[in-house]
Length: 360
Image (tube, rainbow, N blue to C red):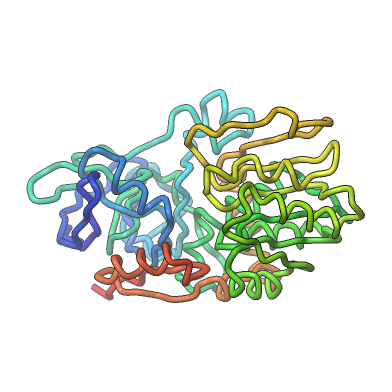
């Protein structure tokens, strides 16, 4: 099968060209991608993969063909793709920690051909393509009426933010929450805090337009941070003023700025919980005094996603109009405009940009 895809050399560049896909084999599904989210991780992977790969990891579309042993979806079903693909049988999956599966299923490289070279699909998905072949465990059937551009963003940023609140931190009713960074992930944290019935939700950002959006998504207070406020010390002081001088019960870091890794600890009351949501992977120095007294810092992966439980729940919340997804998609682009989508993302112009695939 011929498809059009964004393919990166893993050394900082990409092209949009034709690729060839093999037929889905046992436990595999061929999906016609309708929409793919544009994420900072997609941009970062262009510079660190070290080999040629098909880009993209947030996708939604229609099942085109299923291989043997696939029974939960059929041709024509609308589906969402999940990148933290569980094997369903390893130690972690059996204990319910599917997001950290020890034996993630994957489609062999030989199923993807680019210029005569066998390539890999990013996150075993490769959603920045008109078509892809994925493991059956990556495919979630959608039984809710939802546009593909809204559905695709569930597969990473929304799940990460919402799940970090509900699954990982287990935010309590009537608590005070502070959110550092109000891009797509931060807005999803805010929505998770609304769902958890937090009493106070303080959004912190350097972008006033994003703070206005944070209010629409459920923030009760905003703090416009100064780029020269190193470590967000002044913002932390303002958070404490808003929280009776004590600090928030929970603080979520959603900036992906390594220097701000310790910042949520400064926003907390004693005994509070800081959550690293953005997935900072660089070495970060911490003053251990920030952990006094009895403060916790957790770093959950993908909001501790349990695909068969969490995605149906999120889709149902959307159906009930309790989860804003359409409002988060700021702009859509054709696949050929991926460079502009990356440019807008890095400039902070979008809450979320999404690629829409051409009709075949």
